[in-house]
Image (cartoon, rainbow, N blue to C red):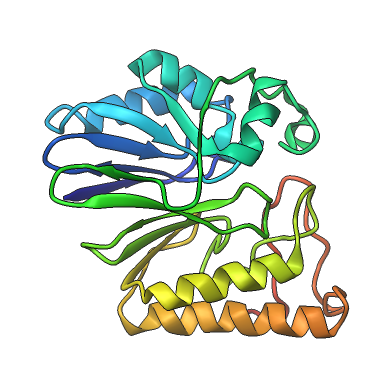
Length: 245
């Protein structure tokens, strides 16, 4: 199996191409701002890979799903997302997708709903959906057991930046439960939405640091440390102060 990661442009989340011996998938799409550029970047990477067969979205936010309609049409492939987000993408919802905060419209996007435990055989390994709500109610991480690799989306946006839970459908206790659920999988590689990939023993250390933060946030009744800066509307993570190692 092969994993190719395309770092996001500007506000875009990163996109991952995951290829087995029989088929390939995309994980996330970025915004609609750079969708033609992203399409060309993907084409340059998949020339010698099995055919793309689906776009898997970790969640409904504009920075993650805004470009899905264009890419789905460009490659002639379906878009899959957790069932709790399908209506939001179909109905041009500007609120729970957070598109309004990007001064953008969420494209009306047809999707195929999936549930926790959905899986696809890529040839040489499965990719499985793990429902991990907290950043949003629909948030899904994707796991390849054969490689012990987890694509965490904004559940873990970066090793040293915790994901926000103060956006529409966000939930602090659910975030904590989702991180604890991921810890039980014992991943050896963690691919966050934006930061560098984490490998080996560092993975569990990173996950436990995020777990500890959300445990403390619950104890503090959702109040962040006063020294932490207020994030911009388009920022999907909090910035610890002092910085986490």
